[in-house]
Picture 1 (cartoon, one colour):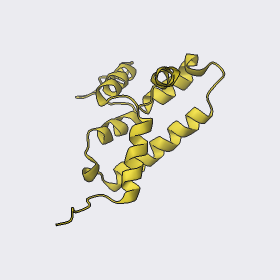
Picture 2 (cartoon, rainbow, N blue to C red):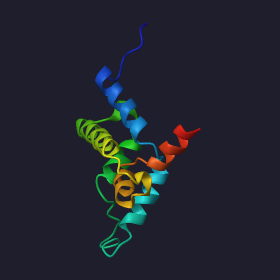
Picture 3 (cartoon, helix red, strand yellow):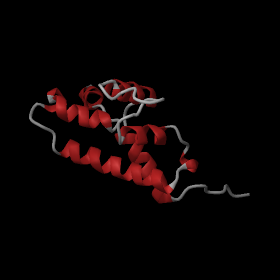
Picture 4 (cartoon, helix red, strand yellow):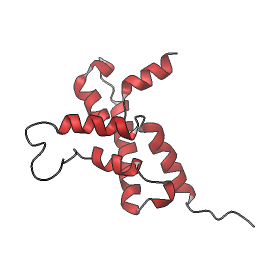
Length: 120
């Protein structure tokens, strides 16, 4: 009996791109977002309000490919596009540019990790 295909080719390609660009684990992203959220507004109310779009990225990282919804696919496509755009506009200082690096980290991409992987 043939295996039943549970996702389409476009979703598979998007999943692979998303996981290639989002190069930190869900635990690392959660820790980063909690650090970023620990400002003045951090613990207002009953829970922690994670910065977006990082919170949405974290939610997608917690899912299996077959459980993705259309909003999840939209988040994934937007994040891949934003990371590509930021990488294409790499500042002269590279990862030493704190603002640029933070923008990437907010999306789940650590440019220092890429540099370390490609340097060796």
